[in-house]
Image (cartoon, rainbow, N blue to C red; front, side, top):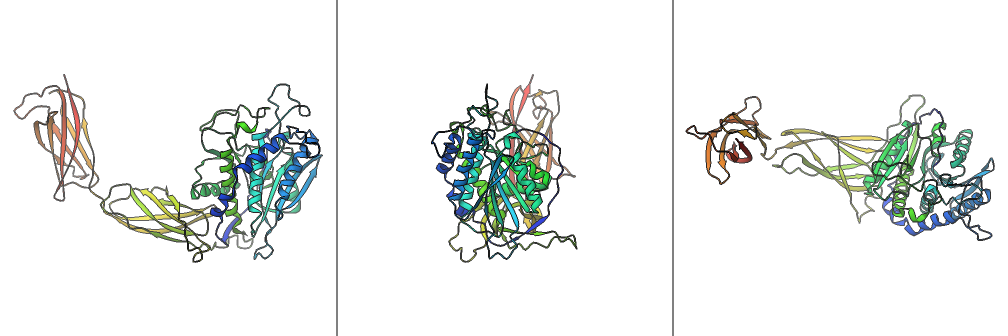
Length: 534
């Protein structure tokens, strides 16, 4: 991750989605190889000269033999996937490595939209004492061999598939000296009139041993991309704590030139401020130092980020994007095929109520239930009859929702990164009677000096109430008739002067107050302690 600041403007792109096939996420996730990722990081950290066999231990852009050697390692790794078209993009003495996976030739769509996964490969260790870009080591295992290794692993897996859209992988040079490689690529894209739908940039994703926190840096025009990651994270149960950082001033990584060019772009990063502690993150003491080596990294975390990016990009590529209609100014209506069913609610239960069911959908989704805007838990269903529903994913869902007694109007939103479709359902809720609490005030109280108020609250209107004060040994001290509140009939009251029936003060100590409530011919009880003081 580099650090510099610049003012910029952004332009929004508009598109909606049409499903063409179900995502392949469940087939993709097992293909991510932990050992492959670790080996790639070590290869880049050591950066062994392909001709002499001598390691450089740096990839700094000013050290051209080392940087060019790293570029060759990356290009050679891309070329192990024969369907990728690999090329060098040279500029200002630097070079990006670009690998394109063209859209499938028989696509019914134009295939001109480009999706990019990127990471920078250059390194620096300027925070180490007496560091020199041409003479000193800069292993850069986390910054950013972690991002490069993740991108290369995703390229290996996705290049075995065909999509209706163009997928591009770019290893950027010159990030640490001013985002030079990404700036050049973004400018070239604008000049060529390329329709870049989304850029996912991977930068420093391996140093967090504390939590599964992952930050996603977005601006307003790319906020929808963060929703894609949130949905994939929940749908595939990857367990990330995703922190969406909406900050147009975060310009320290290769997403920034694409923001300037008006393209949607996000950066996945362990922390946008790795030099200081944060919630769920301890400062990285090896940032931009010669100690940034593979032994400091949480490779399992990098593996998980790779999986999240893999299934998110697959989901994006499995949509067809349609431009906003320039004449009408409206989007074509998306054709969404989904089915949702609800399980009957269990009556005679208490709030919150379990709302559950099943959903069949072309793509990973998030389900939100109102009232309360509750995000439902999802459990994917593995089926053996894929031939019956080849384009649909299946999941069960459940949420705890607060309902009112009687008819309830439920709104169920089925959301993906591009929008929301809603269904409505009427639910008749007949809750079980419940005494929620008994309040006593004042408590503690001076014996015989204050009137004591008892308040009992139920979840439904009560028929009658009475109170019993007992000693700690169970002896009855006083029986009291209570009253039901006329305005709020689910509330009952009682009062006591702290004396026995014939007028004497009760002794100091701890007493038990029990409320006995009548509801539809049944008696329900709830108790609370009362302290009598001198």
